[in-house]
Length: 176
Image (cartoon, rainbow, N blue to C red):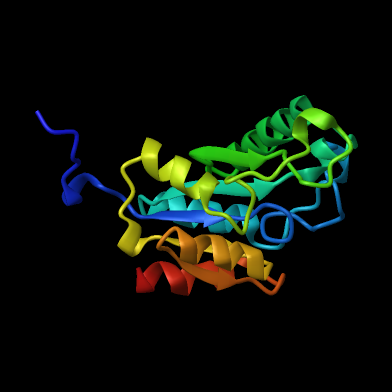
């Protein structure tokens, strides 16, 4: 039996950058008490879920490489975000992050990585694990490097301005 998944069971996905898209980018966020959701972010994730799309987060977390926080903090923040999303009937199917940076101060994290955007590694890893319909999927980011990662993975990418995420995402769901 082949490992090929028929197109009819593949689902579209929205790949969200985290800081600057789902939450305000305050620089090196790792404390739940400092997370401020972008207007409409939780509702945007719920809209994605309601239409049967996968919802993924792909985020560079160089604060780990810089010694500002550790991977446990990243996991704790993502678990807290998942709990907060659940309160409004939304969920993220997978959180992916890259702790590496070539100028990191923590030696084990000081390196180039195929997972660090603008490289598409985090997206490719998700595409390997989930039955995603790439043609109907897209990424929402707030930096050019996010769109470069999307393009390198064969996805459409959209630059978010930081206003209301639900208002931004809903028309894109209609295009897909």
